[in-house]
Length: 210
Image 1 (cartoon, rainbow, N blue to C red):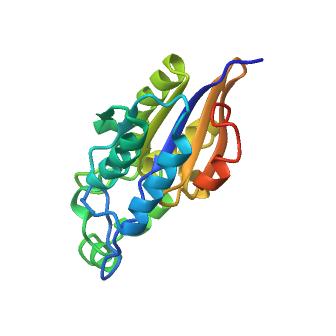
Image 2 (image 1 turned 90 degrees about the vertical axis):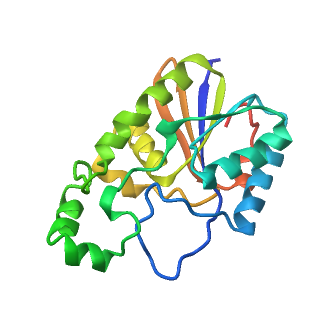
């Protein structure tokens, strides 16, 4: 049997909605009670698995999710700045209409060049990929099973990476809050084994072999 090295990418739980949509990026937002419940469900699901430590973005929506899981698994939580959401610079906290008003043409340009466009003071999705791939490579090379609690942007670009898809196709993936993506590496290479898994779907299978 081929030995699998597994990277589990869990998006933080559901967060509190805002009065109107704004770019989030690395702004802090709080979990809802639903988000905390999602974390506890994953804790029950992952109990008894090979997960012995949890890596997390230091943003509080991820950190709280990770801590709730770690409390059940009785394992350490390690902060990783490279697991933060994409930095959107001057756009963070702004609505689409505000961006279109004060940065004429920039919204349309981003839509045309989703992989390479950088908001002022921010990152592109290509930058994000380059930031997080070293973590993924290290995890898949040295551990049997790694759990990382992170954000939609990180999960999307790593799904593209695992499938060898261009980064501008990242929105083909839909990592909803509290859902899991699974990347595996064996002798035949790196593979995207699953995306957007709910805890009840993951727990139907042997957690040692997602």
